Image (cartoon, rainbow, N blue to C red):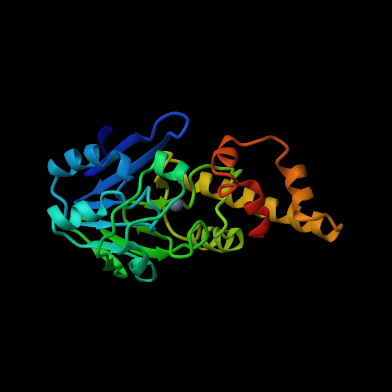
Length: 260
Ligand SMILES: [Zn+2]
């Protein structure tokens, strides 16, 4: 795990989770004592070392996926601070995750934990983080906005400008609504759960919105012409994606089309 102290009292930690080819980056942040997202179970050892050296007042999770909640049970048991999660995901979080093999190899199963209901905002000595609902990637996804510093902690709302695969329960229509709403907020620096810190975060999030909007227009245009989703998939995503293969279609481009 690489760690860096940046901005005014933010610790940025980044680690590789899993082993090749099931290997992806995961990022977590400690902003004035607030742990934002808790990494995956496969990096728990490194996360424990990091958290053991820092003062943590609470953890705030953008969503319940296993790559954002891996250390949550350990935090509840050992640091004994609130671990905030969207109230509609608390029941799911209370039991151990049950995920397919490729996700276990990449992220690992997270233990069940007793989450605390997400408040409207989290206040620390120096900052106030407003909690903003941002469904799309997950129906109970939130982002954290610190307007005085122009920070936005986005979990999996951004990840990259483009997207080639999605889960069945992702919703691109919701993502478009969420990003449109969030772009009205005052922020410049975006802290992503996988791709790190983007100082031109507003520009990048706008680019993602443009990608989703254009993608939706194309899908609608092909549907009007009578193409079935499988044909549209071949037209919009002609190449094969490694993750689509290893996930046996759980994480696939056809899901992107079906969510429109
Ligand atoms: Zn996720």
